[in-house]
Length: 266
Ligand SMILES: NC(=O)c1ccc[n+]([C@@H]2O[C@H](COP(=O)([O-])OP(=O)(O)OC[C@H]3O[C@@H](n4cnc5c(N)ncnc54)[C@H](O)[C@@H]3O)[C@@H](O)[C@H]2O)c1
Image 1 (cartoon, rainbow, N blue to C red):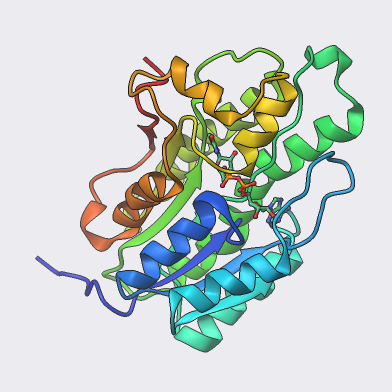
Image 2 (cartoon, rainbow, N blue to C red):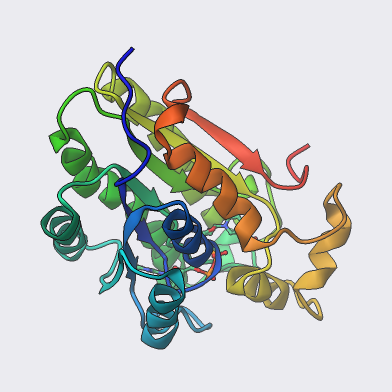
């Protein structure tokens, strides 16, 4: 059987300034990957909470060690994200994994009461981001010579399969990403590139803090009670699954979304 080396693999990660994306960059780097760490690194004027910053993005790169570069880009903009893909190929010689982790949250009210701009932000980033990552990133994965072990991975959400109050748009976007993963897996037939999703539950990040605010809760810790493990997950726990899935040994998994949610989706 042809084997693909586990070292010298190259990844592009969106949403890399903080939370799950940042933990994934650190996890990949610790496993010897080279990484282009992409983030918008500025706020989205359509949303009422702050996004990751350039300082945070650079701190992630510094803490991850050599072989990781920061790249500021809007994950929904094909040209900007294409620049990050080119950077990976120019700096590191190719691309083996695209991990679409950038995401936002908005809602807290029934869909019909949600401001149009917030609805657009959720659909653009949470569904449009992975669509863009697939369209711009997969051609680079396919530029690796055969035999290849390429990975397109999207961060989905337990909201893709559960109706959560006030989060219909977020649920729609994330369910769309689960459909995207299924469709891509079929389009990628026999290419050596797979498409998978990871579905986190309540994970201690800024998105969960914002969710708590949307629900009028005192803090994100309140979400722990609804999860069978009765605690919030750490971003590193979700990242561990993403790093594993990115590796060359997971070529038998495609078209599916794996929950890393402490049992939230049960
Ligand atoms: N935290 C949870 O409980 C939870 C649960 C389920 C799913 N998720 C998903 O996990 C992913 C990561 O979120 P997180 O929890 O780490 O939140 P986070 O807010 O800490 O991180 C999201 C990152 O995405 C970046 N980003 C937002 N819009 C962007 C854009 N247009 N282009 C580039 N970067 C952009 C932000 O700047 C931020 O750094 C998201 O897709 C989110 O929907 C999180």
